[in-house]
Image (cartoon, rainbow, N blue to C red; front, side):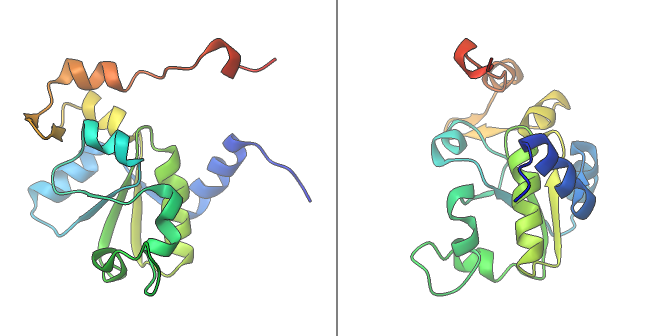
Length: 154
């Protein structure tokens, strides 16, 4: 078995998965086109901020959430198989892999948000939480990677 790195997984996924930049999504939303926004971050991440009208299904249960008959089944998601779907995460990496998986599972029009919510915020598009719209500075600080020294490797 050939072992590959995370970056190689992402490069392979890019070959088979459509990605949209935040400005592409802005155009779709401004044109009032139907777009199902699926946020695959962990629930604790989602609670901090999200794109308006997005649905949160954590990446860890995505496959079973996409199918009938499981504890994790999300009927709204299963019924979205033929809809235009935008998968989002913090940076665009997890969403790329999730979109590839969904495509393999038969979802017809699935896209990943290139640059993720970090790029969404940098393009000055709104993010929300329970208190309303999140200010740009708060969102920017939240999206700064927090890699510890021991996570950098040898």
